[in-house]
Image (cartoon, rainbow, N blue to C red; front, side):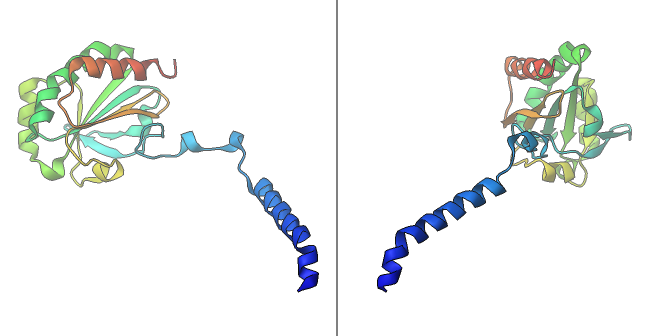
Length: 185
């Protein structure tokens, strides 16, 4: 026991040195970090990809819209806040579409009826794309816990803002839209 006490400080220094060496060897280089390329449905991450059909049957793949600023708005025709913010979303779409803005209204069709969706969008004369999430796959990829939920995605495909609930005022939509249009310029 006396022998161990004599070398105890040296053993502790040896283990400390080995620990520091292990940390140094196993570190991750910040230059090789993929944080911005990781696909997660949260602010600061690459927007997860999905494919959904439009009202005309055309398939839209989110990743194919890279280079454009995107507003993803999850909604349903039976949702009063969703209905209340649709005119503001249409106004922002009209005002910024020539600057590279794409608005995708993702209808929670697994909780809605196509006939009601079509009736409502026709009544408002919405000019942006309405996508049908019939299986709820987009709502699974993006953690939609309440309707409406809106994602603002910049030209690089990075989620810059998430707004849960609504209705959003047109001014707030404009602020977030101008921000995502400016990113990547």
